[in-house]
Length: 90
Image (cartoon, rainbow, N blue to C red; front, side, top):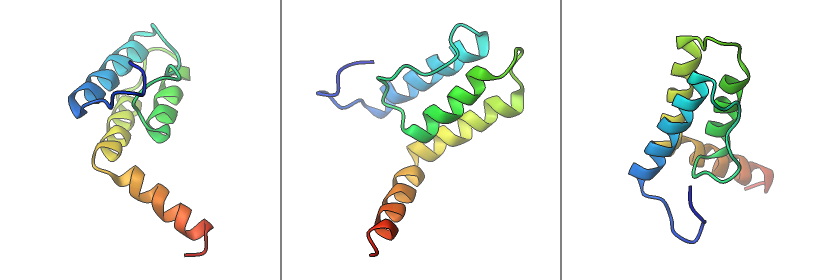
């Protein structure tokens, strides 16, 4: 994780996610650090996994992967934009 002055590459974001997921599954961490290149939805689902009892269930791990996929494919960004437009009455 680095400062926000240099945008992360997709490969770096994937590496971040995989490292955090592995750490959560192993019980080394229970929540995402504040400074990541993951969006809020992805961080939220990882935090839910981190708070779940050990051993972590495969269905919960898969939910994290699915949510991260939604970050990578732009679904989260599109949903946020749509919510903003609705809030602004556009």
